[in-house]
Length: 177
Image 1 (tube, rainbow, N blue to C red):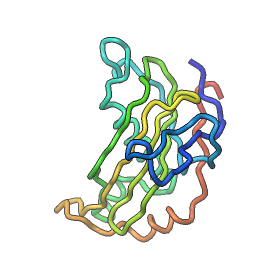
Image 2 (cartoon, one colour):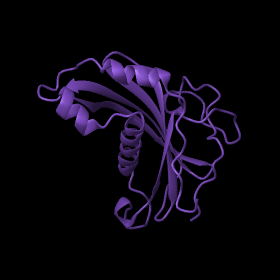
Image 3 (cartoon, one colour):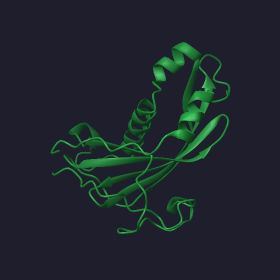
């Protein structure tokens, strides 16, 4: 499968209300700026069921990888945050909508767009694309917690500052780039 094009991702005309929460579905061709981050990956045999279709729970893994790489692109490694500040991010809520299946060997692009930034949590809209086809969309809420007690904690100011100051990061190059 060829790598996806570098065209901007189509998006919902009302980005504040994702389709999975009652808003309109993303429509191919709708104009939008690039998301805050894009992560690309290949679908491997281990990601699929016996029919070669991506197992539904693996979309959460793909989204987790994209969020981790997004934070890394902002200059924050989660293990360093845990060791140095005693803080970590945990998922507190997920909502996903599956629109079309990904299959073995597909090249996917996973977007990360911060939707809401609070003092102790982030709500992130994510989409999984194969080329120009939207496969899955989700809204994930992550909370910052103390690594030992798992009680809520404020997100470090340097992370909040980076979220407000960073321009959109470029997509990672695909295997054919």
